Image (cartoon, rainbow, N blue to C red; front, side, top):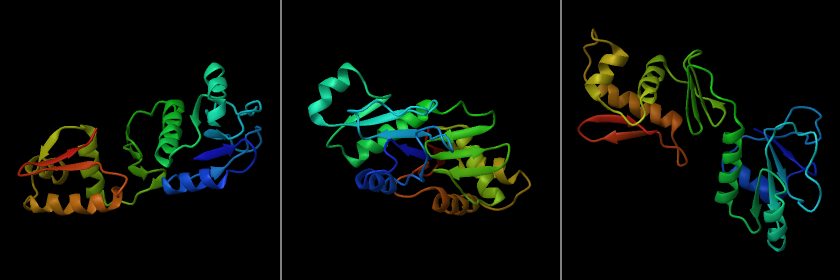
Length: 203
């Protein structure tokens, strides 16, 4: 994620918040030089919004005493009032990025920070590539293709390993456990266990 602070540097509080949220961000210029930013974080709403930002959304940080001015004339695409919480700031940045993102190409499955490119057999989590075995990838692709559907272990065994595979359903459990270890953490949960039945991918 390319972030362009309006004054050339993120404040320590904003930088700390983005880092704790797990954002993989780099600084970009808000004046049109270099890479176009994905978002502009605007900490000085008393001045004019940065120019030359293309279509990058602007999130303004507004002091409480200037709330009335911000409501009358919004200083960007969205604004947040000081003092803000880490969760609120992170949620607003992600909402702006999601709204500004172009439509996914055919064959791309997206669920939050998880992206599955079925054309290239690539998987990304929060922008970082995830290395999966072929069976782990196929298991994820099958589950993610129908979010909310409960798959029986026997069905997954047939869909991923094929009818000729003579292994037991324990094979599915082992691969789900390995898959979870690669795509899930405290901030990301994608696969639910439906006890005595199988697994479901969250929508």
